[in-house]
Length: 473
Ligand code: NAD
Image 1 (tube, rainbow, N blue to C red):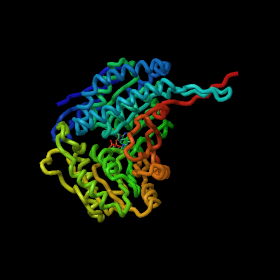
Image 2: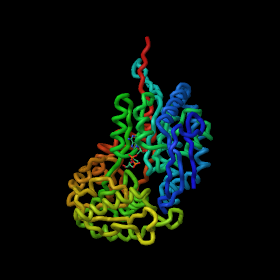
Image 3: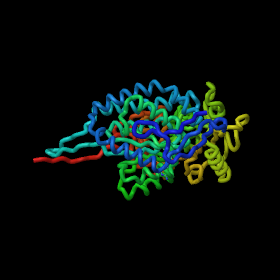
Image 4: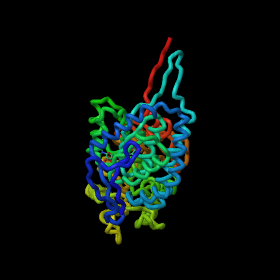
């Protein structure tokens, strides 16, 4: 049982000013596994005041100073990587292999990339005799979701710190352990007091206060559109920048010449492995009508071979959903799919046999899905695939773009030129063709209701910079 009852403010661990205790449970067993103390508004005020004080000197550091600092952070991160992986498994229920192989490395690459970005970033540019400077913006409020508990807090924090801004992090209340370890890493690396602060707590309290705080210059928010709406409204009176990374309903277009093994691999990696709890999961699979049966013949056995179970067991390839609430939501969508006339080819309602205690859900595939059905329009955040057939590539592109979201898209096709031509027509922040590797340093963000900013790499750092023009005679 983990017990953690302190917040990290102004370089030290301290009890919340208005404490309230939250009990957390193991997603794989439903048993309590931790108690943490949540902060209140007064703690946010203390953290923002510390970050504001620290900004005075930290914003004057050189890129070289910050490279040296981030190199120490990277060394500490590496020394804590197994602790981070164990924490991800405990709080999120992700298989340990996935925690070690994807969650922890995705945070590491953010630190390494920030160091590289600082080595070459042009903070000053002359346009004629006008100097255009990029300066640290101020205090950043970082609000993160539970599904990527290492990547999100680490990515936002190192981008802010690389820019010379200071930060107050509010992680999702259901995944606080990784953020606590991050604070320990930054503390051990010698990040100056106040430059980074951690306030655990509820979105409606901590997130809301950060969003409206007059001394916070930018909010970087990742989560749902509903919460982002609250954040943006709270932020509006102080005209602060709000950078949003939101949900998705990503299409996966299999072109007529697609390699079906690669297509299934894409679905297994980006949808099933994370129990569908991925903003960019390919949840709408668009298949040429004449290849549907052939596709299902490869897909269904692969889905039925998924091994659900104890996330710590080596053979497990899919963990539980994070919470009972999420389990209910996913069941509601599966039920809706059946009610609206989609055909279930594998998976379905209820818990998998023998896994009644945790929040396990059956990996599910629907066919005969129409793009107007609820399961094709709304983000489910569970391992549920909607297969939609199409007759022409033009129709496939139209269906792909017929969504309020625009975070990611996937295209499968042997003719790379044809696949690229389709990718260019899709309104999404990232389009991946075939089994190409993900580039963690490329700008990440969405079109439409998937958000309005970009994270990672130089674009991510730029969200924490302000532009100043300097002209002198
Ligand atoms: P959420 O919106 O419920 O919560 C996200 C964060 O916002 C949490 O820290 C929460 O406490 C906080 N919050 C909630 N209400 C708030 C308020 N009124 N004011 C300020 N903060 C508030 O989302 P979630 O369930 O934690 O995460 C899942 C969502 O995140 C999905 O929609 C997913 O697609 C999205 N997501 C997007 C990306 C991306 O990069 N685009 C990455 C990961 C997750």
